Length: 465
Image (cartoon, rainbow, N blue to C red):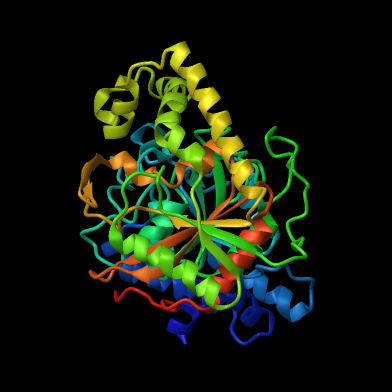
């Protein structure tokens, strides 16, 4: 029964608890036992939340009393350690913030709790949420459950590893350029970065540059992502970007039109990844969806990764400088030092990059005037070994930032994107695809993802731990 609990999705767990087939206490205890058994090998969990079992007992009492129950009643969830959690340490992957305990929950955490979710634990991340691998001086390196010699990604790598390893059914991550979707791809789970501003960033650090930062759900099923999104979305009166009240359950009312591409405009892509993206497109076509290969000329004119690099350094570097002021160098890890050492972007380059970002938005607007969704890769390669800073991909040598080639355009433009597994490498590693929609069109990409999930060749695969 414990194994059934550990790899049931959150929607199913909520149903089992509501119908008294299992108790919330059993569910919480099963996950605590799983953490004890496998976390020493994975190092995804950095702090266990006090009071989870007591909260589960209260949840069971509410079921017995016939009280109104939220959609996540009694279900455990985990949270990346850059997201504030009341009375539970939020240390941001840095000795600078060791022992920091917030006195309020981030809006996203509060909404998960209001839906009945029970905070189980906090998960690992890179220092300051800033890198493609989850490693830091405070809590160390997180390993990929599929192969511990490889990374589960960053910056939400602890969250992705915890969910993939059965330590959590559902969690919250953040995303500046890759950080929700990339880790999901490296561990074979599902995640979504909604339209910028759909989910408030209140209670999350760093927020600069806030126009690129997102918080979003990570899980093992598309329906869990949809459920969590419906719980998380909406203004909170504190985040000025979170203003959208556009419905997210509206249907198209006409047949879908979907394009697929792996480039040009994203950088080099491994052939195995390309095959997986094309397989997803073919699977949709086989069930009657109109699908064709496409290109987006704006991505070829302005390489989004270069645009992002010129913009975010100017805005993020001061936040790093403020956080580290007066601290010893031995309290800083690789990426904080790297960020602080980067040259400032000139005002001319910054303005040029802003104009390029506008052209990218226009290019996507043109595309979505003709199509409802876009299927791309998430990452150009499957999960890589720890500490690699340079890759040879399809014969071209690039630095590690190129892993963000297909994800960062959505941060620059604010478009929603969902990552889900659809393939496996010859080395047995997950390969995910990314489903992109127009602004506020989360319902469309969730629908496309649900269709793909129904015909996926890799459903219900879990790492052997």
